[in-house]
Image 1 (cartoon, one colour):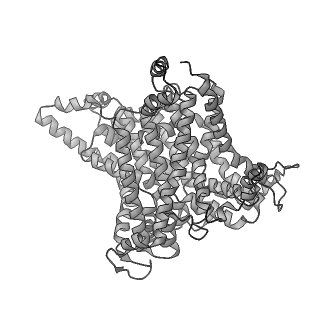
Image 2 (cartoon, chains in turn yellow, green):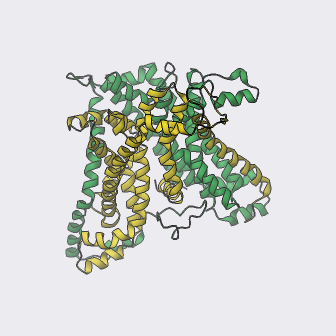
Length: 274
Length: 329
């Protein structure tokens, strides 16, 4: 297809502008983070003598090692269990066609649309009454529940498209539902499961509201949740604040760059499914 | 479909696999082909057993989402400080939500944010996609994808910090304005009651613009190229082609962008909480932050719950008609 040059040029110019807009704030942070500590730099000015050790200092004062560790613990608590539950439920809705599944599905769709703020206050009291306030488990369990609408939705879409003949063939061989799930459907679903795991990882890592409400100790929060405390402590030191914030963003940016193709594809596909 | 294995999907650069079909006719036939009652009864029993697969997810969802939602409805009819025994007040909290100018203004702010979260990003994304249509440079496409997606994957709280620094008195925004000779308009943007809300909104633009652009660019690649050829032969101009082919062809993708970003605008919390906390004064207060403050700072649980439920109802009232509009041909 030949696209006319007259529209390509302004289009590409606009695209380049949008790209510049996307990186500009991050460049501003980086240039500030490299200034001498305690100075009052301008928003964007490359330092004559970049102070890379600012990142080492920010790593220490923000205690990034601890933060990354607890974020990772949360992710390890949420993602494997969440993905397993969603895969089973998606199988029940997409393949087994359980009676009443439509109602369950409608309730999940409601959860996809609901603003999360509507559950946060009662959730706080519920977790408190369960004795789980300020525990990791008290953060992991709600995060699993919160991830269910999208996750089940995603896996259901996969199992709707998985050929039904497979289960029929295996049930003739005398396999029960669990056996044909384990032996036939699970291996076929692995690509969908892997995408879901990536998306759930991102949403868990970036979770903010739940983390600041259910966890008093910033060191046990998600990294996003820890930002709140960090800003409170270092709001006066612009240089360290920017260095620390970049460090807190860095894992997500690295994960994105590493899995870019998969993440973009999953996010686009996931949103169109939704 | 959602395959992680790149070789199975058509996604290269900026194209997107076709969305999955819903109900497949094969299965509709299956029931029709099973006339024997015995077999059908057996099948039904087997299907109930299928709930064993769905139950764990359903229980987690019910306990940690639906139950708090139900409790929220209950709280909304009470005056409760979280400690002492609550008193039943009927609809008082709801009356309050609809009459208190502060609470009403927070809802107004949320709707105002739609301009920045939805209208601007979707318009620019449409323009970029419609103008470029097919990006011939693979390298530029890849770079665009990387740079445009980063704001969407970092925590929104972190985005708010980046922009708080951009908006500071010595920040890059004022620096830029000074360079182009607009020093007179420089200010501490987030501290200016008149400018703080649009400034916060622009953070939403920053987050959503790239996602919408990539989604629409990948969507336009799926439109049959012969349509554009035909339009060209008919002598249609850019705007005619845009209206007649691009807009209808991107209907589903536009619907997705609009839906996701409107929910993000109405339910915004992270950005506002980290950049302004609703201030200065009340100028950037949104329902999400207001619910948090009422619920956890002011201990007015009933009012917080009523406001959260009104917000939920508004989101549904906006999203459901939109879904219908973008789904039907």
